[in-house]
Image: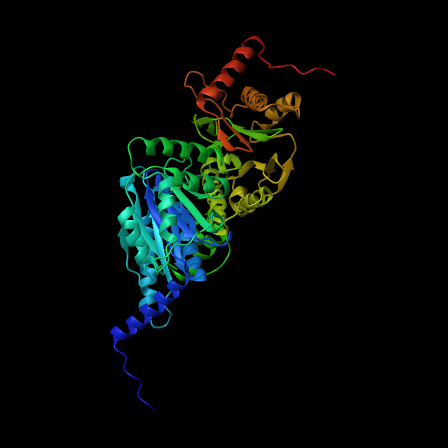
Length: 260
Length: 281
């Protein structure tokens, strides 16, 4: 009987991390940004039916990059967790922090157990507050760590480069159109620095809009509304200048509720 | 299996197992004791005294449906609550009104709302109106054990059918039997009188305003003859809950609107206590 090769724990973990990272890098990146009235999710997704973003609960949204079947599984687990918790206690007792902890535990256990292959996913859990200060964004890499993010976050293969681009340009109090424009600019930059065009029909956009009168703040932005916002973002002045963002934010939320 | 909602930890296997899009199915596998229908009841002598909700009425009009309920809950001959709410939105395009044991009924509505929302989130699409009505049927059926002990829940379900572009009403019996009603329907102890009133006043070309007035007239007549149904309480400013579901979705009339309808009806009844007269022929 031959002796098994010794593999150091460091090496085993590094191998698993590399495996997961490679899997995540195969998919397209996505970004999550705060804007004046909430949080916007933007990603390139040619599919109309298989979503990268979705609603978990009233104020909580979910975004994921990586392997679809694995993050879909986690998403449904999260919906079940949130609904059961809200049913047991109260709707206000379902929080993004609680959900992020559960996801982190789940991902962490899978990552460090030798029986399972690590999940090739990177998640974002975001909760919109009643004011911008109350917004929470958590990034959950494949190994089960939690990163508490502010302003903007990118996940996926090209995330580092996109994050740097966003960090330099993102400002508090941007309008939805400005935030969307910035997100699309960030996503359309390739690793070698060249830019490419992402047409509106390949974009998946969703928001957690704190101004929505409904209890459930999650809303997909599609079709004409998306095209209008992309157009507005192009013609808007410098982000964050004076009274202009307020006026635009007002018109955004007005037309948003008319579309429903 | 221990529920994982109390302490942070890894999601239990049940949460990550692919399965049904129904929250009730998930709950019945993972934590069956949380479902109202799965509760073990001790044998009781006679009927258990608990607050009962009374009259719910609904009427369709071209473009939607109106669902309304009075505000009284009774326990035997005592008025248990004067301002109970018995009409709830089920989701964007439907609402449910409940008569019967108030505590169980409110719990059932909460679970029903969650069931529809859960399906929508998991599947990324809403159930058909027929599907929602059937789901409610299943829930009432699971409550049959308690209904046999006098704790019955009898809802009225109304919604806007987006595919057919019209309002529809479904009524239920205690065994979960479901039947679609055409034009108008009522449930609860005052329903006999409410239905009589609506029968004489209903037309199939009512406007939304006329339909909301119609249901309040019917509730007034129910309160007139049924002691368990509460009429508009002007002194305490408690008015019926009136909801409208149309293409624009669910809308609950503000207190100012319901009070105006109720007050104009009251003013007319001061002159004509039996209400509007229908033509003999």
